[in-house]
Image (cartoon, rainbow, N blue to C red; front, side, top):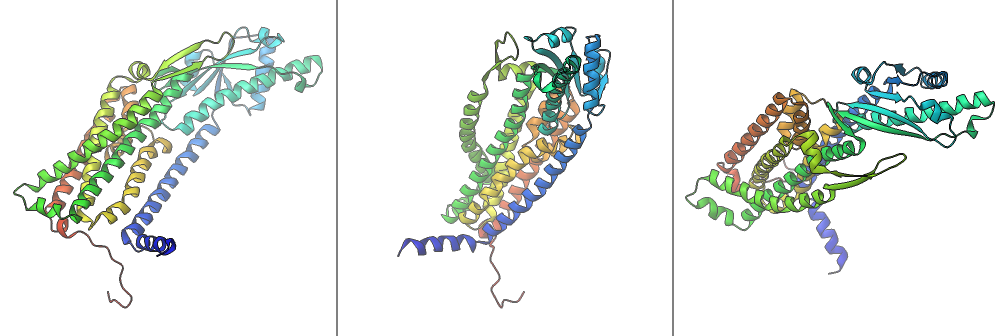
Length: 424
């Protein structure tokens, strides 16, 4: 037999498998709905930032600085608003630009660059909104630089394109009330995306292991022998969940250790003159800005997620007839968990009781929600998330035990296509 018939035979075997077709339909439907939710969140975030007004603290009261600010305000469509102090500005606006006392002297000095300060207030986990706000600060800085060129060109009667002034902005970011440098905030956003992804990945691996091991035992007839033993079936369920957890911990530890080595230290250079290297340690950031509670919550979320996904995998493996059907559902399980891990982050929902309940139900986004709740000192959201996660885990385990006490655990759920001419 040549290679072509063998390949055709294998492809037909997949295409004729109802579980494979159902998994594709479910996966497509899930990500279509998820994509619409994320798209709605991105659109609302974009609209929120589009008309954002910027507070300006004018510490240079010279006529030159006033004219520069007037041109910049006109160019921006009147989005710049004068405020008396940084504290008042941050309280009123999400982005505040500070024009320092030496602004005019540096702007008129050919060899000097313009230095500005910006303060950005961020109170969302959405990278779309936070990224847009930090970009606005940079855009306003560039606008100030062009306005400086315009004022100088008007005074000297030359083309503004002949004048180029470099602008350096030192940005300070206030994230849920915690002051961070730009490099610290970059590390924070990396953690917000990295931690839920790792939890979701390990949960997906765990569910796949549990379903595959259970389905393989059924094919090898070892499953029926195990059920015939004088052992409570709930103990069998718990043993299988623990076995899949141990296997996933080994795999997850390798992932986590590798990523932790990657993120444990990052060196960045401070912009501007006299730049010096600043060493940023991720663990120091967690202890100082987020709180040690975040690590404990991450561990709790991981343990609950492993039990939760293990119970789902055992339940799935117990109702399918063989490992082929379990394998057909393996990829959808993985991608569903990974999709849920990122969904709340990109949708940009506020961190409150409602999102705490949602994060507890699916567990994967729980570390990100708990991280924010820990930073803001919102114990109610923290307790609600963990409580709902524990309750949902218990319910899924109870469902697995219930399935094991039914005849379907031996016979399996058989999916077949109706034959032509078969009457319903």
